[in-house]
Image: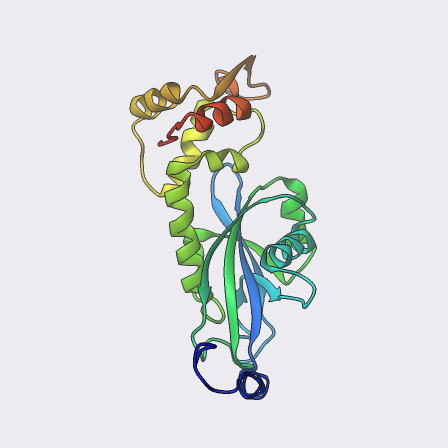
Length: 241
């Protein structure tokens, strides 16, 4: 039925109100990187039949907020951070996906630098856990599908956009940058080829500094040149790593 048909619109609206009782939620895949592992923030479920499972972090969309606002609220409530990198990925609408009724969810992924404060969030809350992506088994609901889709999207966008810098400290070494790409993409990259492509992008600032407090030869430190990237992007620059 559509508004272009001859049925009475008031009757159509009445049917919606009486028959189409659907809730909308947002589920967030919060990726964190601890310099060695890609992790996801998980919440222990207390809902039957998933009491022994972890789930992604999510909530119903409130009547006074849109999807992005809902996702931002969830991220802030769980991490204490604002203005995180956030990407909407897909909607999930299988009829039986939620045990309490018809719930359509929209999935987002976000990126955070895993520092001590963020790690302590899980340490101080027994229901939260930063789990390594590679160690995640069965999640509640259809959250394995959501996680897989968001991880696939992250891998594609990591190659196409400089979003990886969202997971690194402001000052980093080239080895740390390559380790990040290898961890997320789950593959080994040729060092010379990676650095050749990186140099061609011309979006790093040589800080003329080296690492401190390391038990090996200190490496040079770099920073992401946001302004250089924006200028080049306006000219049709293709990131591509």
